[in-house]
Amino acid sequence: MVIGESTVVTGLEHLNAPTDEIVLDIDSLKKYYAMGGGFAFFGDKQQLKAVDDISFNIRRGETFGLVGESGCGKTTTAKTVLGLEALTSGVISFEGTDISKLDRAGKKNFRSNVQAVFQDPWSSLNPRMRVRSIVGEPLEIATSMTKKQIADRVGDLLTEVGLNPYQANLYPHEFSGGQRQRIGIARALSLNPELIILDEPVSALDVSIRAQIMNLLVDLQKEHNLSYLLIAHNLATVRYMCHRVGVMYLGRIVETGATDPLFDNPLHPYTKALISAALPSHPDIVREEIILPGEVPSPINPPSGCTFNPRCPMKIGEICEQLPPKLADEETDHGVSCHLYTNSLEAARAKDGGAAAAISAEPEPAAAE
Ligand SMILES: Nc1ncnc2c1ncn2[C@@H]1O[C@H](COP(=O)(O)OP(=O)(O)O)[C@@H](O)[C@H]1O
Ligand code: SF4
Ligand SMILES: [Mg+2]
Image 1 (cartoon, protein in one colour):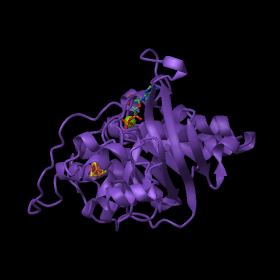
Image 2 (spheres, rainbow, N blue to C red; image 1 turned 30 degrees about the vertical axis):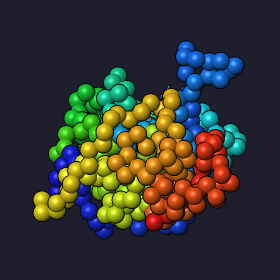
Image 3 (cartoon, rainbow, N blue to C red; image 1 turned 180 degrees about the vertical axis):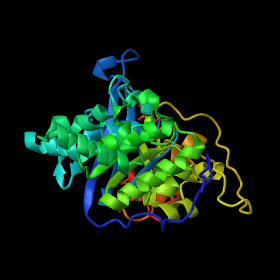
């Protein structure tokens, strides 16, 4: 099956069955970047809100997908989980422990157990290193394995990702894009991780190669009961690979739920627009494309209230401009952050103690599905 650029594939029968055990738990994560220049009166520096209060979790054997347009905060989320960026606030817990509280041994364990595969196999593989060094490097650093043991393990890993052990002597430029991504996956697997963060793992590949790499990742997940955080802007990739999905817009998750219900019955106007722009899974399925007006606003000065309000074709009125809707936080349910799913402005104001007009108010809980 070839999965096209935006063809949406349905059905999750090909995926692993996750357990209930939570491997990664993200609670109210924020990552703001301080911006230089601009107006900075009274120490009130401008901030770019790359990730603005997101929560989700990933279970053992599960793929959770973060999907959204470029710039919505997906990679920043990945970087904070990997410790490549310091978080502004929030808690990231791995196997029940807040990772900011890990001791030396705990940090080492975390670094072995959480690996990453990035979009561009060109820039993520050192061009001057042979494949055996690229794949074996984590083993050299983090284990006391002998050279012979590492060489054997590298051979096994290359076989597992569909390459030949003799290719260990080659350099990255001697491989195709798909093969280079296989090398990146072999390296990520070398320390037997529990969780792999896949940041746009197939976006740079030819469409014909994407399905092969996606199937490899799905097979490896089944074999090792791996958990994946999959980051993608392509809906077909997310639908094919993910058990659950979070849709991001301007640093926030606006809708989350199990993949099929979310794709079959999107609730948030932004999700509806995203899905309407993808090709349906069958030519007989008629779908009207929703064209959103305008551009994604800057995360430096995001719109007040619901940040989607300047582009929303279903905007209700002033509540959308004044009161940020909150995402229902039952992770396993279909949650949506939109006032269409709360009762009315009056009800929201009453619940909020009349703070709707004061935009600094705590956001209102919005109903789930
Ligand atoms: N180091 C940084 N400094 C300032 N802004 C950044 C930095 N990294 C990312 N950003 C900004 O954060 C926002 C989210 O970026 P990113 O997480 O890369 O989005 P995505 O991966 O969804 O395309 C963007 O507006 C981007 O310009
Ligand atoms: S809260 Fe209002 S502006 Fe935001 S998505 Fe819902 S209807 Fe649209
Ligand atoms: Mg990105």
